[in-house]
Length: 215
Image 1 (spheres, rainbow, N blue to C red):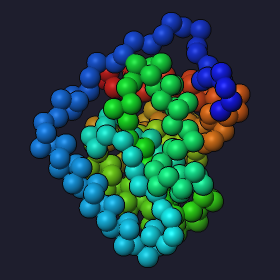
Image 2 (image 1 turned 90 degrees about the vertical axis):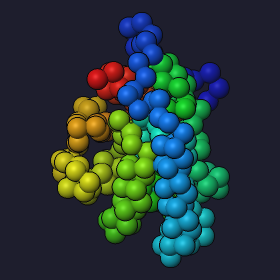
Image 3 (image 1 turned 30 degrees about the horizontal axis):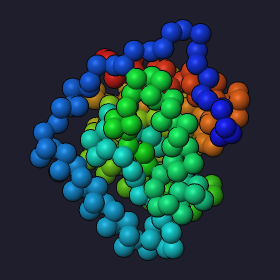
Image 4 (image 1 turned 60 degrees about the vertical axis):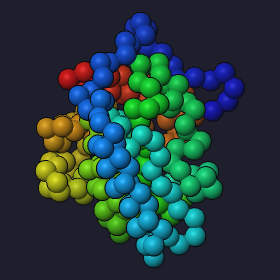
């Protein structure tokens, strides 16, 4: 994102910070348990013959975050840093801050961990096993899926752990897939933070997130 370029604001006034979600006051043991499950997943990924070939990416952020960000595959910068959303962290943080959602409420991850290219269906199916572990450990209230491939990955989880995910998830409309979880599909990255029209659509879609957290 170039200097001075920001996610566009809507004509409406700045959204108010949503009330803390019910699990925002988690006890230390709850957070420690989630962190332990994520550490175990990281070890599994490191040992995986698919995910652990060369560089790979792990999820980053709060281990008990109400908002999970999901993209289908890492960028080259993600593979270099070892964490998700490396190039997009600054504009996304600014966008969520404008919505009153602090960085400490966000966890970001990828479906595929080892390649900065469009993944195959087999890659997606394999990566979804890891995503499901993260969803259950982190316990988000909303998953923001960036692009059709990330949405398709979530659809493969239908029926797993009580999830009821439709085959097709339309962009911009929050869909409740479990009593405690909503999925919101939006623009693919990096276009969502670099291209003018895509940035406007991303900003429009993200305004649904505080409303979900308030319910």
